[in-house]
Amino acid sequence: MVDVARAAGVSHQTVSRVLNGHPSVAPATKARVYGAIEELGYRRNPAARALVTRRSHVIGVVSFGTTLYGPASTLFGIEQAASRAGYFVSVASLEAIDRQHVREAVARLSEQSVDGVVVIAPQQEAVDALSEVPAELPVVVVEGGEGAGRSLVCVDQAAGAALVTRHLLEQGAPTVWHVAGPVDWLEAQARTTGWRRELEDGGAKVPEPLHGDWSPASGYACGQVLAERADVRAVFVANDQMALGVLRAFHERGVRVPGDVLVAGFDDVPEAAYFTPPLTTIRQDFTAVGHRSIDLLLGQIDHGDQESRMEVVPPELVVRQSTIGQPRH
Image 1 (tube, helix red, strand yellow):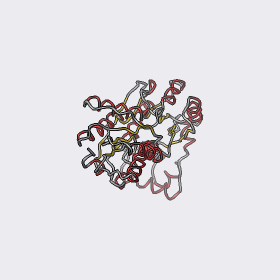
Image 2 (spheres, helix red, strand yellow; image 1 turned 90 degrees about the horizontal axis):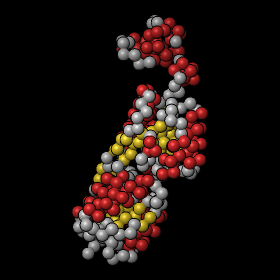
Image 3 (cartoon, one colour; image 1 turned 30 degrees about the vertical axis):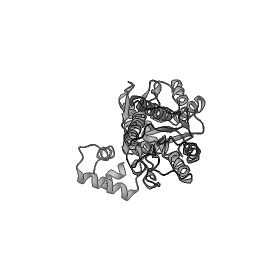
């Protein structure tokens, strides 16, 4: 800092103010300081800074299923928000969601002196494991049901399922069949709850749901079963990848979408608009999830805010050609 100050013709206190974003430094002075930094090849020493501030400026993220669109997009949203807040991200990706793996991941991140942890918890067992995390460690849970007493950020999965189910009923379908996600995933449970509630509120019959594992192959298998039934006129699929498999099965069996059966998904993956036909689906705002997660975590880190809070991000219905047409009679 002394070398930079000498090169810029300012005091080392001024250099410190510039590096810490102090508002009292004139733009011309900032420009001279940054020019000197560039010329001298000056780089901050994060380790030394952490010793002084007792902050690592690193946030830990516990994640699972990062090959799936939802968890991967959630992680990306968190990384973007953390970067904008001046934090780096250290990710612990779990092979399995259970108490032991979650506990070990949080412990490993704590050993790296992270300032706080975001846990992407799609299954109840991961949420339950948070009860063993030290209370003094700042933690925010994403998509974690009730959050185990920790601050929680989630998309309103049940509301999204209700939106798309209501849309299908409004197109004239007497009821809506459901291809659900894995039974132990909280998001799948919430989507099934929203679908069922909307059918019951509308006085429609509630068919027994079929279950997949989020993959197109499992959607294809469920689609083969549904294609054999003459009473299927509308299907809500719990994610877009499984919906792709359902569309393939219907196409092979000569079931026209949307002419014979209406099909809708959930997530709005980038490819959904290019399915045949383009897929009606529910869009989740993963950027908002990331920002709200980091905002809640920084509230704990910066201000010691230990009060448990919940942030719910609303879903959005995106209507495309797969549900614009007459269901089969």
